[in-house]
Image 1 (tube, rainbow, N blue to C red):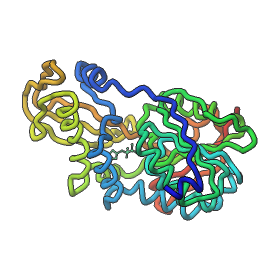
Image 2: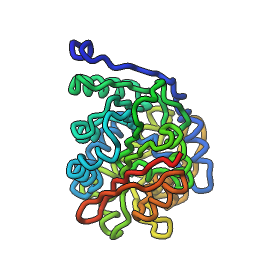
Image 3: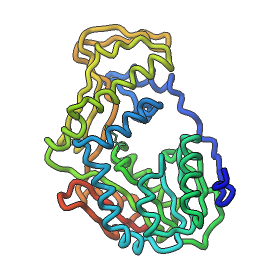
Length: 323
Ligand code: AVJ
């Protein structure tokens, strides 16, 4: 507590509307191609499994991105400008930003996350570790429009969006999302964003089909969560994890495949599955450097710099908002 007195966190609750999981899941399961949005992966167990995925030998994105941030942090800092107002979208545990804070030395750090508890805990820990840093924690859904809850125009603005989370959006939605980030930043604002790259499909597919089955457990946990929270009777062992690289659309797709014909009761409704029928649970788009820069341009940004690892597995882009 003493630490939070020394460097208090300013908390701004924008009261994000909680997802209506029942309505969204039932609507998705009523579609000809059944689907459930990946945001529903992250209950307590799903978040724990995702953290375990990030440690897997096959899952290269996390460690590769951290390596790029460590190696090029000083240069990134010079591109973003000193004394910035730095917004992190979907800050989670704020682990990656720690790698950059020493080099970046922003005046204000503004983590934005929908998970109130997690946001506050991480923000308090960060404020204690960086006593000179002004921390403004914002509880908001970054995938919906919002504005920054501070009247600050003295610091140059920057946004940090690591982890290739942008890959979860359909490209048209990614473009809309980036355009809104540009509106938060204003002219000359900088965006630092991690983007997973297209590569040998065997490497991509291994990252989503790890030998220990952690990704399979992460995918199947969705069914356990729905059973518990919506009242459903999915049998986990009647579904299997399926992940593959769709080359035409340049994306990893994750599905849950019904291993037999079955009827499942979900929130008072009967849902029928044919043998082999799938629920599409996630897309993870992979970009080329040019391809992502074009997307940035369409969204009102000008590419500034891009950094990659020596095997070109992952990229971190700095883009400037054209205003
Ligand atoms: C958090 C969306 C970046 O797409 O790689 C990892 C999620 N899914 N393994 C990704 C995920 C399965 C991850 N993102």
